[in-house]
Image 1 (cartoon, one colour):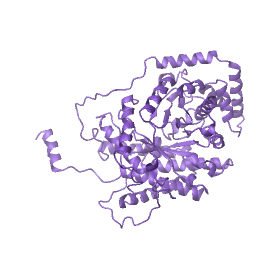
Image 2 (cartoon, rainbow, N blue to C red):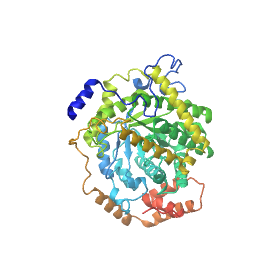
Image 3 (cartoon, rainbow, N blue to C red):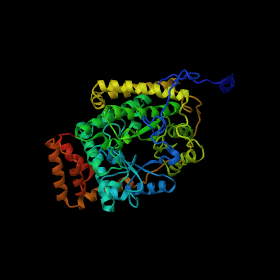
Image 4 (cartoon, rainbow, N blue to C red):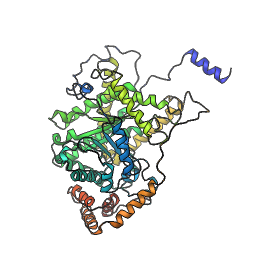
Length: 543
């Protein structure tokens, strides 16, 4: 019998999946009955918000369609923002390139090869002005994807731009990522410690939060990037427990500065993943809403109900998207987007089907937005709030996942909290163990991936459009920043940098944000500002 006949025989005999466990290892029962769950759940919009933070959810207002974008120069990214808004995007999600996220200028040798490749290159106040040209900052919410200390520079640029536009800061709507551990490539030790001292990173992140709380009440002061945690290979329980534990540390840090929890908790947001296990992902987000509500009320004494709202944006997971048979990814991202909607999220980015090859093309970006629009307007799944609520299986899974998240959070707390666990390498150990397990499961077939470990096409020829950067983009950015540094007035730049150096050298407990903003106003670049603090800390950039 030939190979093709063997395959046909297998199909005709009936196919079976290898096991019935969730991606987190929870065993699905064959049938769920009242004996598995006989509880009661609160109504939507009622504590502890299992069924959603609003009583009418999408019947009143759809989630924000917020496709992540950013590439090349600020001019090119501005064009893409306007394109996305023109086809139905309702919020801006702006990513910076690797150099920006490491506090390096485009002309720095280590940064040159990566200028503008995975995000837009941001270095000066003028870059921010160009990036948001003709964008009403008080009408469209913006997410700025960069971590501290560099978030302080980017946020300063944004606030100064609003001031130039005549927009009061209290009218700004959006988010600064501003998480010291989860942004760059998840909470991996080297990525968070190699380019800036970690304790100073945490301090400046808290400085940004503290500065924004009384001045920009509609702006989210931190966005814990659980998505990047999950993309490291951890499971749903670890994703939630790590992000909740880190949020607890940030809350403690702000309270220790004298802030009341209800003055800032409602401005803490999350950025979560949705993987391929539809029911587990819905259960994870429902469980996390309960945990956040109870943690804020019972541990931190929050009184304002809005402080207890777990508000999260979702990006559909890129990790399961494949270079093999890339059109299959359209189905994967549609299922993930549906899970996000069924879970009651606030904002969604549907990852492009071409993720394994490049940044999204305009065509891919449009398909992602249309996917969300079809689910919203045609599928009817938004007609009722929490339509899966009351399912024996889903409620049992929500309870089980919540219990497992609390258990892991207790382990982290007993070890001194997330930040301490990170510094001691425990978090990295957990991530590496999860990575190895995921790789082994794919290799063995325990985690099926269509087109990779089953239903492969040996002679597959992939033909899709690939995003291409303009050939002169990097050289143009490097030349631009070199000219910028030469033509400005150097004296105010040096004066502002000296002040920042002194604050850092003296280990001042003062909030650094205004000093950083003054350096931005004086036309100091991103790296010059960061280098002043690095030198004061006797810290050297690798390479």
